[in-house]
Length: 150
Image 1 (cartoon, rainbow, N blue to C red):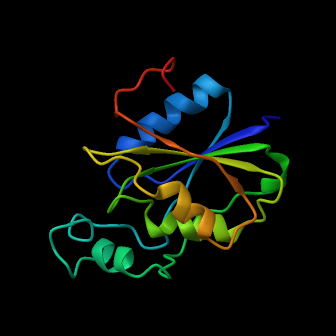
Image 2 (image 1 turned 30 degrees about the vertical axis):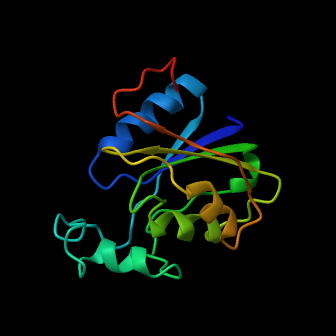
Image 3 (image 1 turned 180 degrees about the vertical axis):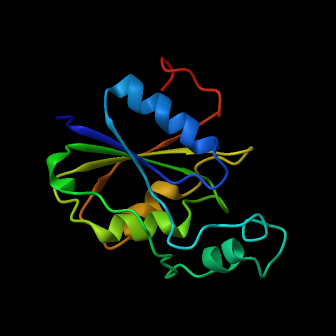
C-alpha cells in the first residue's frame, strides 16, 4: 500500500499528464478529482466575466461538487494535489477537495500547471480552507516536466 497519493484536477488534460508522471516517479497512488458537472470550453473562458470558472473564482466560498471519492484518506502520509492555476491560485474545486476529507496528520503538497502564471498565493489560500492539512509550499511545473524534475 502506498503512503503517498497524487490527487489532481485537470480541466483540459495538461495537469493529468503531469500527475501521472509524478505518480509513477513517487510510486504513489493516483486519484482524479472529477467535478460533478464537467467544465465545458465556455465554462473555462477566463475572458468572459460570466463564465463558470470566472464566477467561481470571484467567490472565495464557491465549492463546486466533486463526483469522485477517496476511500480512507487517512492511510496516506503525503497527498500531492495538482491543478491548473486559475487567477493566480487553485481552482475552487480544490478547496472542495480539501474540505471534504479529514487531512489531520497529512502533508499536502500542491503542484500546478499554467500557461505562464506562477503559484501566486495558492499555498496561503489552501491553508485558509477548512482543512486540518499541513499544506506546504508548492511548485508550478511546465506540462513537459520530466520525472526527475518532479
